[in-house]
Image (tube, rainbow, N blue to C red; front, side, top):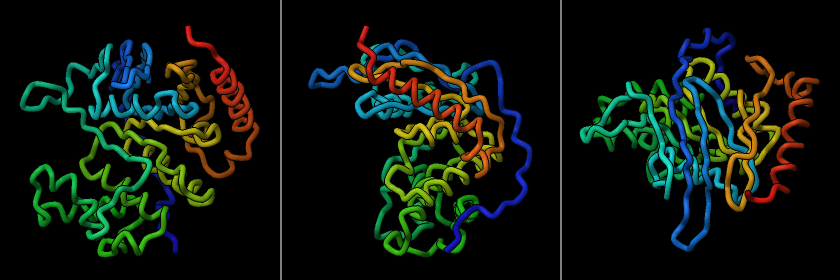
Length: 277
């Protein structure tokens, strides 16, 4: 069953870059109620249209940082800054315009694929009739246009994750946050979804922050890799991946890919042995 994106020729990437970051973390720390210091003094700029991966071992605060950016948690200290021209909500706070893809698809088992994708618009008060065209278009984007009336139990793991991605994209977010979305999938499905994600990113010019444990995945996808150290979670090194886009399957066996993987792997090893300051 082929649910891959069928586009053979990608349009030129939209020109969304600017000198101003889309989101900035300034000295962000997070202490949980049990006293655990999950993040310490994390500072990071993510530019418009960038693909940035947060890479590190379990317990280094990658998912915590992602949730704070999404507004699903508050920092104990430090700030999250959005550009001055960001849209504002009714209270005057920045409207983050974020899509979030979690580690598990978290689909409603009693609802069809189309109904699951509609959910974020439904929560905004958009009727199903008004949303139908956007639902159909979003399902086409992820290669699931033939499965609108299917139920989650009828889908493979990779297809469920595509539904989860479609649900994150239905609101047309400027920033896509992805928390190890492909970690539980088999290698072939994971590679295919990596390819499809890059095609969509190149086509639509989103900004992506992607959490992963995998050196190989981070190098394949990213422009920048933020290597994090644990206990407490902190930025160890911010690394650029020196390889052009588009990246296709042959990139995985290239000398450039292997050199970048070795460099990032060595840095991750350093980070895992680093002592807190």
